[in-house]
Figure 1 (cartoon, rainbow, N blue to C red):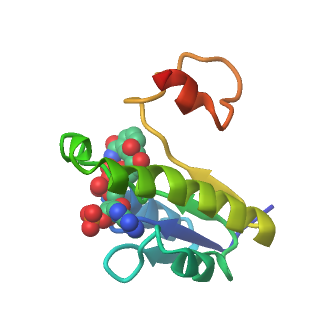
Figure 2: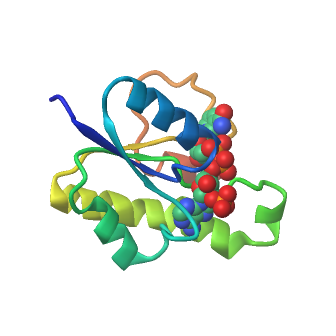
Length: 124
Ligand SMILES: NC(=O)c1ccc[n+]([C@@H]2O[C@H](COP(=O)([O-])OP(=O)(O)OC[C@H]3O[C@@H](n4cnc5c(N)ncnc54)[C@H](OP(=O)(O)O)[C@@H]3O)[C@@H](O)[C@H]2O)c1
């Protein structure tokens, strides 16, 4: 399936910025969503971002590893619950989502697909 536009959540971050440049260079229209206008933990804002999207790449993330130890709830909301909600909303809307993880969590050594509960197994 060929897409004409790409929605990038967290599109002002390091990865999102680079992805937006590459997508534009390849002729895609880019829709950027990021703080402070867009908060991925806000269900209504998430629905609005999904609406009208052809494909979504999620680069929005709580990435301050040290601070995450004292802001556990916020880190879980952004990196966990909001991503689950994104998946549900996008599935209902028929919009594919690519979520970027990190080699801090997955070392890339596992062959085949990772199941949604893989991260829970990792920390168990
Ligand atoms: N950069 C890499 O080389 C790399 C490599 C492997 C994996 N990744 C993964 O790619 C993802 C993005 O990484 P990054 O390096 O681009 O991080 P980043 O520069 O910190 O970008 C994350 C973006 O998400 C935004 N954000 C934070 N909380 C948000 C919220 N509640 N709602 C909406 N947006 C929010 C941040 O805004 P603020 O800056 O205002 O907080 C920022 O613009 C992460 O999951 C990371 O693990 C990155």
